[in-house]
Image 1: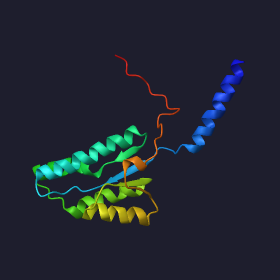
Image 2 (image 1 turned 90 degrees about the horizontal axis):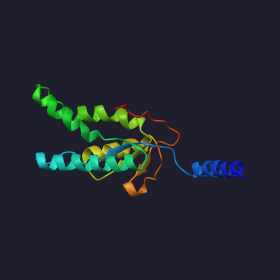
Image 3 (image 1 turned 135 degrees about the vertical axis):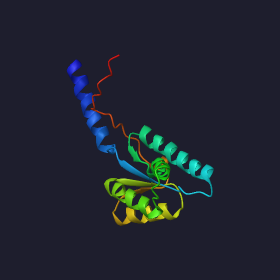
Length: 146
């Protein structure tokens, strides 16, 4: 009896896996620039919040807005990185991703969207469109010893 239960369970899990998508690397494209530091922070926070939601759905976000920290530090050490520098920084990451989430209109996000389309990437326009996936299915994580 026990053997039948496990065989049925294994069969059901395999069937579910066929309909489940693999974990995706998702590029988050959205407005970054703003008229002032508060607007930039709001845009960065929004991208991070969305990235957290993507992660909780079982996928792995790339959030280019995090280069805001690089920009801040570059200015501290006297390095002037331009908008084009950051686009050049981000495009290789876009190429590595499976998909792009488009959060809204901006020069950079529109350029990233067009690049993603030309590369044949899957495009999402809302976090709700992204299917959930358990990225940790079958992954054994060692617990930290205290």
